[in-house]
Image (cartoon, rainbow, N blue to C red; front, side, top):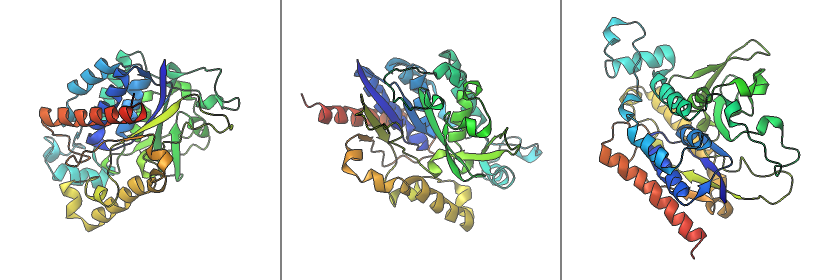
Length: 327
């Protein structure tokens, strides 16, 4: 059996490339005892953890109606009932802290997971006698998604960190955690996570704000050699190219303050991991998907463009496999 732990970077619509790379690894016969993801990477990681095979993942991506992802909010305003472009986004940004609700993609993720008998993290529990002896019980899951608690100023690794909020990870819905990780600042409305210990709720945004590519998340800390490799899939370019691609919203361009915020957040998402990405040992276990003409929020792609992005990911993973095993 060929096993890999999988770590998937966030990057919005560029996640089509992630899907292609994961499909190629599945076709090659790899299984993934653990998968971690940020933002759109959390979606693919959740589907892998739920047991989707290559054909199922490809079909799910083909069935996804990406045009529905930017779901405008009317907020009870009659003029916005039909979702007036620019006006809807602008009002939602001011009143809800996000241009779009994020409800449609949340429901879609939940439906796919339920079809594969996954609802809560209890369905993704794993017991492996070969794990580190000091591995906490809170870490014994097939899936980890990252999110950012801007109220407490910390990176969240869910389900690992639910206990910090007095919450039982086994009771928490996987789709809810993925939606938290998807909360691109200014684009999607942020989520709220209750804290049963303090009674104060936290505002949660995209995990990429603090770590968009935590490729070392599954590395052993007990000094023993890893039983199998961790492979990561990257879909964002390095700085400065990434600055223009994270939030290409017309509304953002109308407000200098939002443009400034765009640059700050993009630097956090891409730049925070930049130093480790330059290390040779990290590059050796990273599949980099080149998608030069695909923006993070390009959700209105043609069918042909979507298939081309998936194929780019497939080719990147195929090239990685050839280098790793030239025979």
